[in-house]
Image 1 (cartoon, one colour):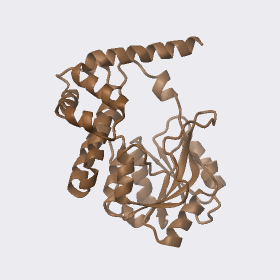
Image 2 (cartoon, helix red, strand yellow):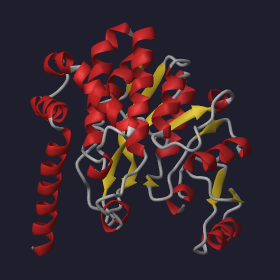
Image 3 (cartoon, rainbow, N blue to C red):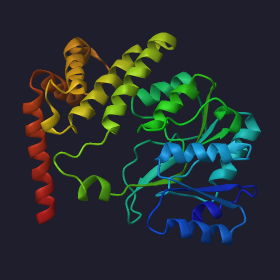
Image 4 (cartoon, one colour):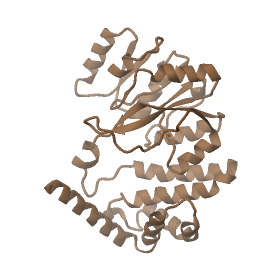
Length: 314
């Protein structure tokens, strides 16, 4: 919140949505609002990120709409630069580049490598970059005119919600103007993924990424046939991600979702071997999972446990 309040852009409306907090955050929200007249707070029952964002969309009065997740922070120039790009060139959307930092502020390897210079990326090319896992689907790094959301809301009850909604919006706009400066900082916290993880822990995000991969395959085949092979690659990669995380106890053919993932791999063995956008390592893992999924998963889980154990001892 301090980083948002420090923006150099003067005409900010800041909506602070308290999504059912139970740790005193509600009082902190009101304190922040008392310190800065630009802040409006809204308290609601816990409903998740999409629910909170949708409330924000209903309450917002500004001409442009952007988002900042609660763990992250932004540089002072972010909204001035994004608004400047939209108004100077009439673009339908603008994006600042991002980096990832750990809880102590140390830079992590870039997930999304920024362009070397300003770049207007048309929607089909932006979609291609997403399919190759090089693009940034986050709404937090972007600024849109409010009319973009007139017919759209974030899907509630789902994870990977940014990807799902961005697919819809990309079909209606010409593209996104990308600024190279890494002004948005994603804070990667370990607590939710390691300290609380057990062998049977499994986030539904790994189900949603597969469902969204199927959606994008249909979209590519219908509207962007040049991206067919890219979409196949994306489908195979997302299913590989699912198989690397699903608990071994759930890897049974009685599990309908798991069974469909395995059937998909077996139907696409030729695509796995020939797809030019998969790495050699991707192909090896996919073929092994196709042949002996539970065995491969057990070996992979064992190696992962050994690496964690060695690091802990060190």
